[in-house]
Length: 210
Length: 210
Length: 210
Image 1: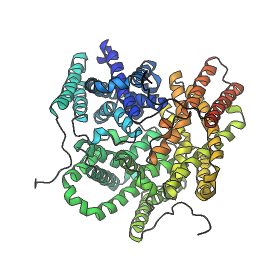
Image 2: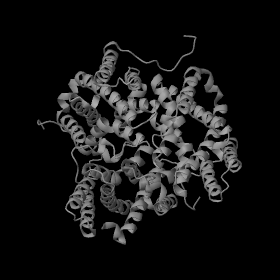
Image 3: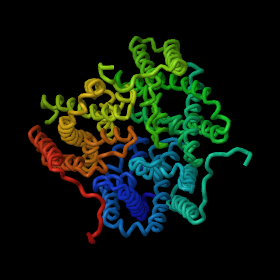
Image 4: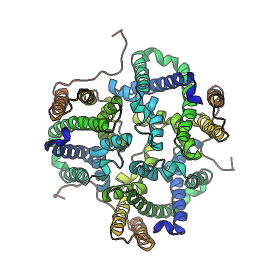
């Protein structure tokens, strides 16, 4: 099983840390105060998991009760609070790290949904939400339309494919460490490819005339 | 009981479908990508029920776990995705269909609250929320102030009256198919009358001087 | 225990009433209709508690099921609906009352979290959220960035210190009426001092160079 891997908790903390940095950076840009910056770090790093846990009835959510994860979010916020004059230039590094967090969160979130006995479709929804929900909360709290809904560049689609693959493995009784790691690597690779090669989802249909 | 009617599941699916179309249309207008359009279809068609289910503890909500309802939302989104160049002109039809969804959702939502053993006041709240919550989520996710809060034209008020009437029938042990259908028809009629005759709720009080 | 005090329910109702006034005032300024004004009164007066209850699994939340609290929110909304031409001038009074609500909500919210068996960190989160969540919902529903995140003047920090102190007392078995009242008075005093002496939280770090 995935949770047995010693590497998985490390990656989860790393994902929260990177997500928190993205939230704190958005807050810094909006000139929030230090409390607001930490709230945004929390929301971006842990908000997706909180939404998942509320939807599947896993309350209180780990995002408000797990000291390790809370500390990771706080640390990400503090690093960005003090480091933003320099870290803004490390955008490429943050974006790649974020792809890793997306991959991990979508797989782990789907597994958690399945472990709580949801239907397959609900597991896919909460898996994707674990991956993209933190960024959506970050955007809503800073007064922006969630970037994942309109940016075109593939972000949710890799998470969706990863969640579907995870459910498939689970159904086939193949959701062990090797299978789930392979799915997460695939999600990561597709997201990085989208960044590298500008793979875009289509916008509104313009009709057959064009 | 209302849920025994064979017609009710059909109407519920139709309500989700129409709600999803309104969400997808809002997303098309904001130039969201295809993923964002489908998320908005889901949010507008099923978001009210999701909020209701989270508030009464019916998790996971049917809005993320019921394949039939999810398919209805997806279908509504796809129809608007491909049909929006023509469907924008069918606004009147969509608005009348939406009145039907409002009527059905507010009655069904109130009944579900009562079935979960809530207080009467909580059943009214979740009934109204089932009716108007999807539209509120749609507006928040597209960066708009929820239209139901400021538009004046009666929308929430019919849902509120319908929820109150539903609780009344339930208390009198009259919440059968006939009674609930009558309430839903009343909500629908009041909403259509508001559209036709421009019935408005008052804005902020201006004092006795005017 | 705090809940045994006859004074506590009175203060809780007063807190909801004042919160509701702030929500209704924001809605009046945005020219919402009477339904929107009442929704904002509810959201600002009871929204923090609703978020808390959803996160700790206390569903349905008291904010939608307790008739006494709902009536307090409605009353606050109605008073502001009819009284806003005069009450806008009573801003100082409302701000001080709101400090009392913040103090009470953060202490009571933390205690409720602990009573539901959350971890200490979760109790602190829901305590602060009980205090500041209503205002955040008010701002999001009126299309504003939550003021608590960027205003600088200390608002969440007193609530945070109060929640931490409440957890400390609970751990020491000192969370009786006297201890909790002392914490609430401290939160109130710090918030009023922040208003009086313009105590601000820092904004984004500017680096050692300045």
